[in-house]
Length: 456
Image 1 (cartoon, one colour):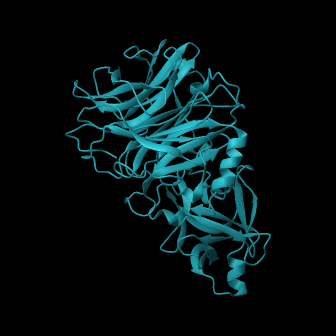
Image 2: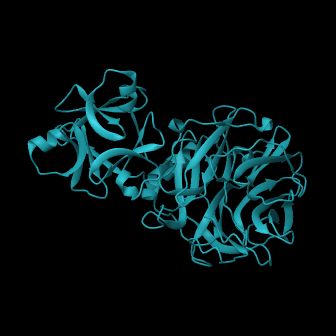
Image 3: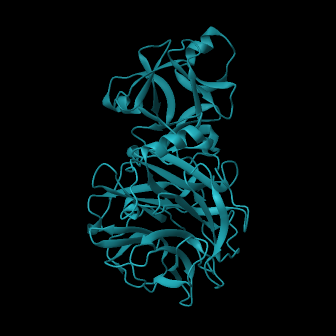
């Protein structure tokens, strides 16, 4: 996602809607109890799995996500560059949604657009009123648009990253009531050095928070007002390598805040940190066992939704027909096949479909399961001399037995899963030196090796 360095227009971008943005809504609405994530997708080689439309995923806990519409886009821009990056969902004061996004398809960093994409939606199932909104006349792009409600103005503040007369990236703001017309741009935050990817949490115990990317690190500023120029940096940085796209999310069940970040290589990896006190400005990295990102997802935005909206989105768009399996003791790694050998490798996997599995009724016993490859659907994961490999189903009873496993409570964590061999019932699927095999399990290390999270 890194642009032409001579322009220094874009080092990454972020989008989110924290719970705090919905506070102060005048009308009565059902309480939010779930989350929706928006994003675009990029594979590591910008090939299969790359799409610059609006993608959605949902979650009940804000950490583990179910992609909708088979991880395909739900809507795609029809103006400008005909693609988007850095989408953002805001629940407006009337309970409906507005979607904003950068006007760019792919990685043509020389493309300059003063516009952002805009959609309206009552339910995130249908999208209406699509248009592009012009924000300025400067010869610079409008990156990573987000919005918040400014009660003192009775308008929404629309913030975005751009290079203004200062010669470096700053965060700009325009004010709008309808996302059709907007005020003249103003500098919202300029500490004197490059800052991009602004993300807001408004009205939290008397403070308003702005997180942004500074020197490949996620940093926070705060203010008791929402006035442009009033924010002061205060937090320690959070990063995992080069990190961008800060996204603040408030837990719906506790006082915990999460800060999501995205590495800015193609098919970036999401990392998350947590804090029990946003005013402290310090963050602790979350164990990757606790969260997953939608496959190929880039630059997410997260908003809260109701249980009814969560259920309606799942019913309308559908959950994926495939799964991914995350390793318990190596949670950056997922089960995949490579040269027809079963193994666990770090996300992102290329080609990404090597890590997608259709879990079907067991070939030898329908109360068990078999793992059918998504990109080689005639092949199944089976054991041969105790090693797991991807073979064509030859229709024999031996193959069916070798390819059938019983799903059990995870040997290292009962909330996860383990898989016991059908025809070698003392043996479980486990990894050893990252290669999959079936073994008897007798140690705590082996129990961890044999435990997986079945998700997306």
